[in-house]
Length: 586
Image 1 (cartoon, rainbow, N blue to C red):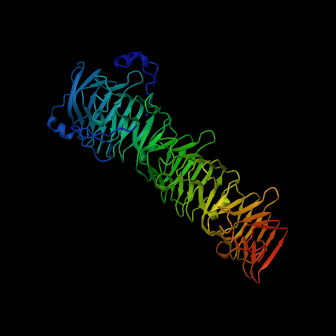
Image 2 (cartoon, helix red, strand yellow):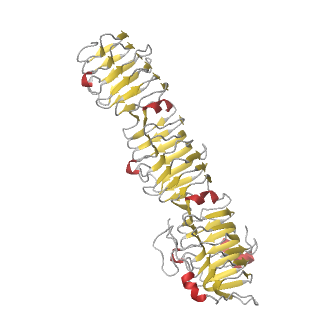
């Protein structure tokens, strides 16, 4: 809304602000409110002491005036009957409490407040502030200094408060805010400005919320525009400007478990989660949203929850640490849910604190990854435990992850396509696969980075490997093709397939074991090196099993290049053998 010159002058707005829209906006943590007698030391979601203790002695001293309008009309005390403030100007000389089911209506009025006063609404009462575009209602301190009065409190037992065309400024004394909701209170805001609090423009504690929040704005609130519970995020509307002028433009989000399906809108300021959040319902995050997390914070998607991140190529969703460029500043996103979780056009950065990862998929969890960048983790960009599912894995990018790009179960390797981009420059630019049997047919069409086996690998279904792949193995590891499985590794002269030890040392790893009678067991244009640990070989064909090895290099085994047991079926031709302690074939 646009305020007239007359209103701006009447409300004490400097003429330099005349060009601002009436419900403008703007966003550091501040402390929460406390009792009216002692300032708080930090934010709390516990019940704050209301003003009842300081107003009981004022019962019956309500000085709201129904007579002719003095200027200003002096008001203080407890309002227990429906009352309207519609004179030109009021002055709160002390605390005002609206109680006993009363309604206080404030109509196109300027309310000046004495130092440290509080307007409190509870006990079945409500507040209706109804200004107009030309003459908004204004609540402000008489000294015009941020934090010189407490502000407006809407608390337990109140009926939904309503604010329309209202300016609230200079609150925050004692850790309060221009507007402070607590203990289940709700309020509606339309075309409002929250200006120059010493803390937040609006602070809403756990279990509170907004029935609407439209066309509002924030100006110069040093702790941030708002502090709200995670459950109130879907109440925010894009028509509001949250950027808070030149001070921190952010909405601080207190940890709370989300149990109702909701949408987190992409407002024009970041969400800041000091302690993370827990999701136990379907949450969609809109394109362009920016979510920052405090040190050690975790965003957890539990059983029954869904995280559906709907970024776009030109407008990604970002989950990052508050301290940017610091690997391990926060823990990351935990996926426990096995529902339709999706990260599309998403940036996740700076995770990995306490052994977590940018994205950590717990045992049995499920997530689709589509054009996501997982960067600057203190551990892995992606860590997926056993029995997890990656139904879609396309166009992902990894860089700066200190333990490696990703650690995934071996069965998920088939989901990693060649369009995945790996730019890690810390010497761990690879895919790490955890020991788990492949039981579904798969084609390993891999990007141009090594796949590393820190333990054994077991193949119990048909697996094909496309040209150019490289596999490295930790000391003593064995790749076993078991009954019901086959390994078809078909390289070519321009794209050989490599199986080698992590160190180029004879006998460093065990080698490839063929323990299945399958004609699709084939190594063509491959290099197999450094096997033989524990008496195995680069290629070991068990009795009564079969394999074909052609046009390949088998080198530096601590035993033979190939061991074929009696009764096995080995077909070999065009191979090159070198450095094998027991010769080419035994």
